[in-house]
Length: 251
Image (cartoon, rainbow, N blue to C red; front, side, top):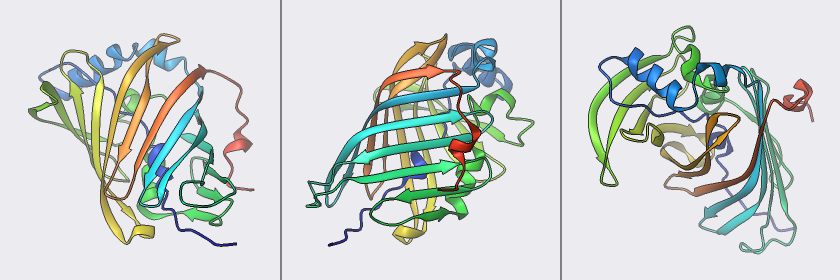
């Protein structure tokens, strides 16, 4: 069987969304406004798990790969993404199953065509840095540093910019619509050994909908010089029972 190298930066799909806020004088005010805009501390604090389903399209030099995707999250930072990709565009008859798991400590990308790979380095650090349902709920306790940067304009709208420095993983710039209080973009430099080094990753979020009193972006577009990954959610459900074993790296 002919093999194809199709770079999939899947750890970026699980990267957690940082929410938006109104203009404020201090980081604490920014964080509290953010939490209120997303539904409030009480509503966020009631969430223990999330199951989301939808469609994913990965645009690569070899053609678009698309198919259904399931994304699972469990507090405090467990995550899993499972997808079945149609490879007819690059000329492969069989589908590619990708199952990326992170159990809070270790991560593994299971790929039916390219083989399995343990996630390490910067990609693993970024997964460790994630927190469900929000990094901002306990950011000080987690050792995260947040700085307010000068306001900018994005797509003709005023945005607040935060520089977020976690204890591990990539430093991120977070752009928030100053009127809607919702995240519109994040950017970060990530290290991807499969591609030979550092690349700039941009995530654009939109189509926010209230689910159980919490705002959830139903559209996410992750773009880099290598590929663009578009996820359109169809369903989101909270507080399902998710067995911890489903996040294990064991196959």
